Image 1 (cartoon, helix red, strand yellow):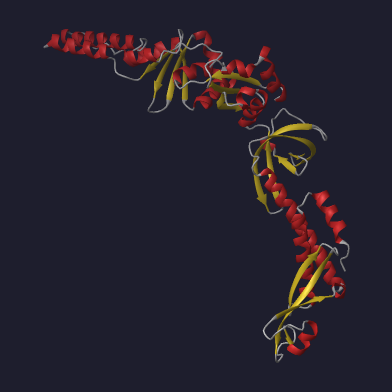
Image 2 (cartoon, one colour; image 1 turned 90 degrees about the horizontal axis):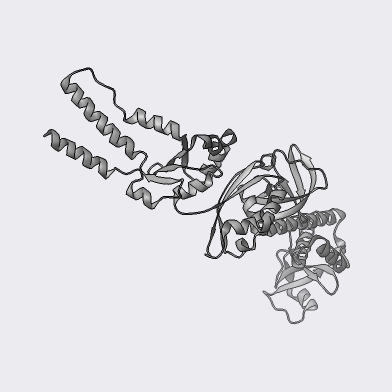
Length: 419
């Protein structure tokens, strides 16, 4: 039935890239399945591939007995010794069967099993090839659109670029080459499913890893990425070598490196920011190009109150809040931005007390409240001792939420004066 299989096996191995042992095992299983179907599983059969003859051989195994009770599984000792003179009762005797005795239906069954095994081997190969490549950049060719999703040919397999992972203003035609990020690989019912992305934040990190040798060598590290695909991206970078400027390494000579990334992202704006453990200083850099006057840090709620000059407020917030939104994603803290005028008004509303009706006693209490308000108002714009250590720049101060010792001493002195 199946003759000269060596050439066929070699051709399938070459075309499909399947391991030869996997295909030989599939052939043995297929022929054994056909033989069991022909004999209705009444006999003990084994299939073995003969490389020299290039065919799958079927062997029937029977037990040598003195008296036969089951003719399908047992053989008389005298008949057995005609085949093998040295056989004894209780031995298992294997006899080669003629493969050509299989029926047409059995041969068709063998064909279907072979096809199924080849498909399973192909799926397993694709899954093993891509399961450890999540997070990598790959190049593919656009094949077609299916309900808004893009089918990309990666060579070994086709992958899916879902509509939700596409950048809105990017359009592709059949045959276009595209660089994509592998975000997920999973085994589905119909085989391995490779999910690609063009909007994932790590796509930008992977592009910089490819363009900047210092990143691939581990000298510079990308600490955080905040992205609104198709519009703007902020990345924070740090250097483990004092002689290497992380921002300069990512920008490159005359901006060549960052420009290559921008071109791949089709004009998306990229802000490269130096990373630091000081969250106040980091937030100042993250809000660039806006200039920051002061920052108040609340460690309990992980929130930042940022004060900027009046003419910098719109720049700090950005178009539709994009700049402050990306800065919040990059730092991982909540950011509240106020202009200097609005901050001064809020301070007055919080610390200024309402004047009481006329009267000597009431007037004295009002004067005392005004004095306390004046002290409190002055501390809202001053830099306490803890804040001086966290000063980020000449135009950016980090103020911690701690009590002012000078204000407390002033209140104690007034209480002693009243006593």
